[in-house]
Length: 213
Image 1 (cartoon, rainbow, N blue to C red):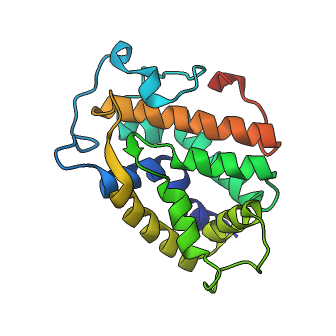
Image 2: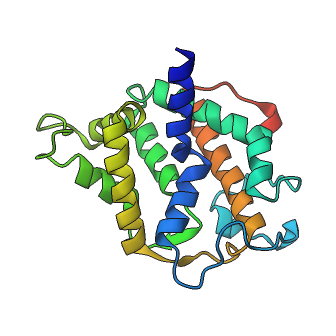
Image 3: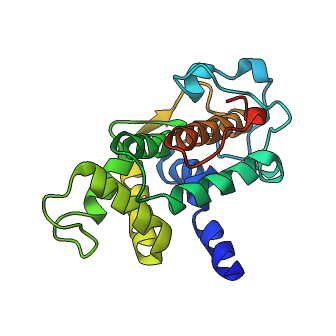
């Protein structure tokens, strides 16, 4: 059981920090500053608009690099989010599962259209062996996609490959202010908070005052 949990968390790291980094590597335009090579900037120069259209985000000025993120409580929270989301993949409300994939889609890159929705449509198309029965709702397909992503290495590989493809096709440019190491780490902290807030709303996590939510 312990090895299963470790493998589960490692393979599903893409639900947290890895989701943005995968999209950045796959879809960043030529000439974009690679993550980890930029000089950390002063927190005041990071644009809240670039990070999220939600104003209630919390900056953690102590966390400026990916390594610091991994050693911080945000990494632990990311792991808890993965476990909660996967453990309740079939329990999301219709609006909740739509918000989950919308948040998953949130990226420092600007997209012409959603790479995540395109990837789900490709992997779970009606002719796919992973498809649900005809007549399933969009929310049913989205819950099914998360459940399979969490529990099937074959589906996870297919979905990540599709995500890389569509992120490369639909990625336009980095959002303003997203060209530094510090800004991307802060973006990840906000994305973690957005996922946590959604899971709290869905009843899958308890509210944690330390995260500013």
